[in-house]
Structures are given as structure tokens and as C-alpha cells.
Image (cartoon, rainbow, N blue to C red; front, side, top):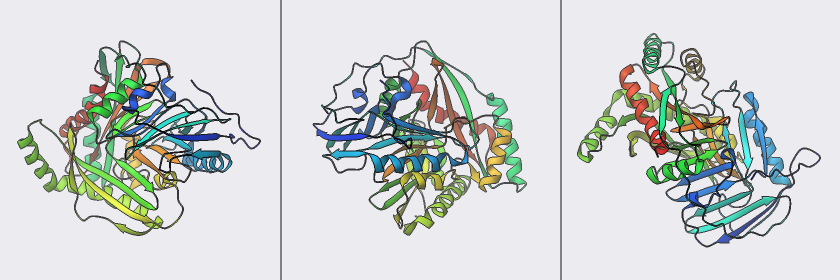
Length: 425
């Protein structure tokens, strides 16, 4: 299904883009054709709306400290040279690229921007299909694909560290915080999933979108998950970021969960962790905004498996910075790294014994105008390109002075639950 458009003399592909309005196509995840290579499937779905796509009309792979900047420069050239016709004037219609980027600049996972050959979108009751290639092509509404087949039974094994080793690393991090070496550090761990049959990305996308409808179910370049955290949205001059930090596991009993939500909202440990994250996001966005609204107190976001302290930071864009460049300026926030950033990153490098790859990095999309949505790749896993029955799952926890290692391990298990459940046949 991959079909890359030939590049012009400067290495920029000459794209022809046609967007047509279509009747409501129903479940977006069911439109992705059977047999598309897992790395060629993209999605961004929340509450039934969003974007799905397949194929590769064009792409760029980047690396190092310039991974965001090189992708942004390439995208500017692509949008300038493309010929676009669209019947829909909404963010995500017309020429669009999906991207994901490594958490750390020295990770071999680097970054990618992918322009699918077909994109289907729906927003506010309006649906469309976009075809992208080197010529103007027919643009019929997509058909519903056969239902994906599950991967069979899944086995889970420790990744870089066992649970006991990881709690020891957390305890080491807490000692560093108490010694004044760092204020907060986010510790990640990985788990290896092995399934009986190949993992169909459509299976994961559909299950995540149904079970966690108020998160953003994403797939880009084999990275699949359901993130509750919007790193940045840029839409018609308005910038929004949803900050999550501070977590408590749900019990399934509504009365008990309400009491837990109240305790979370009063927890000095979780409020401290949350304040660091909000401050880091506001400080990064402020240079790009003419005005900002940063709420004084967080609200409690209820998800099926956990509850989070959440704050929505909103600003009015003062320049022409694209959503991708805004994502670069925000990464890594205190919600996924810690504070101070450099000191927290050094602790992560010394204690995790793990290449996070694109976990906890920006993942999302942008269109030709620069509008787009970029989440943080949380509650996610990376498909193994060499073994279709293998997937590496990730979870992370914010560590502050009051953190208890065993409680953090339990929290990480609750954050792994969405991907574990999605893999269950």
C-alpha cells in the first residue's frame, strides 16, 4: 500500500491533493483497508471524530537535536509546492502530515513526518476524504473494511528492568530529590508483549477508541496508543495545552472513586507534581502568545482506569509558529521529564536503563496552514518492525519528594492497563 511520490529537483515531492466532502462514513477505524502494513496506518481519533489514513505519499525521517526543525523545514517546502483542491475548510482537511518524534535527541528512533496517500476525516458532523499523489485522481468515499482479527493470547515480560529493579531506581531518584539534586523526575518502564498471531494495528485502534473515547487514539509509524494529554493544539490563532500530572487508580466503585478524586485534589504530593508540569508548559508557550489563561487550580479528569489532576492552558498566538514548532518548544515538559529539565534528563539517563524511543515524545498531525494537534505519546506501545507478534509497552510516573516506590510501581501498572486490555483477544 506504500506509494511514495517522486521528489522534485530539491528533494521535495510534487504533491497533488484533492479533498472531497462525503456522507458520514461511520466508525473511522473500520475504514482502514485490510492488509495495510502496520507502519503505514495512521490515526487520530477522539469521541468518534478525527482522522485516519493509510499509505505513504511522502515522508521525511529526522534525527538528533534538529529532528523537529528539519521536519518543520521540509513541511514548509512540501506545502509550498503542493497543488491542493478542497471542498472542506476545516483543520485536518486538505494536505496533512502525521508525525512522531523520539523523547531523547540521541535516540536512534529519531522522528518522522508521514503524508498518507489517503486520509478520511470527520469533525462536527462534516466528513471528507483526501487523496494525495503525484496526479489528480478519482476521490470516491471509502468502503468499510472487514473487521480485524485479534492477535490471540498475549504474554507479558519485564523489559529493561524488573518491577523490583524499577522500584529501587525510583527510591534512588527520591533520595536525589531529597538531596536537592532535582525537584521532580519522571521515571518510565517498559514491558514486552508477545502475542500468538500478528498484531493488526486496526484492532488496537478500534479497541482503544471505543474503551477510552475521551483520549486521543493515535497510530503513527507503528507507535500506537491512547493519550489523555494534549501537548498542544493550534487552531485558527488559539493555542491550547492540557497538562496532566498527579494520578490515582480507580476502583470501579463510583462512590469510592468520588472520594478518591477528592483526596487527589487535596494531595500535596500530587499538587506539587502538577504545579511543576503546568509551570513548564506556561513558560514555554508564553513567548509565542499575546495573552494566556493559566487556571490557578486543576480539575480531576476521570478516565476508565485512572484519574488525573488536569489543567487546560490557553493562549492567543502572537506569531505564525506552526503546531509542530510549538510542540518542539514544549518538549520535554515536566510532565514527562521533570524539573529542572537538564538535571531530570540526566537522572533518567542514569536510572532507567531504557531507550524510550518515541514514547513520551510528541505525536500528532499538522495541516498546510500550520494548525494541528500534538499529544504526548503516553499509554502506548511500539510495534516491532521485525516481529509482528511483538510490541514494547511503556508507562511512566512523576517522582517527587513524597513518592513511595511501591505505590509508583502500582501506578505504572494501572497506566499499562489500556494497552494490555487492547491486546487481549
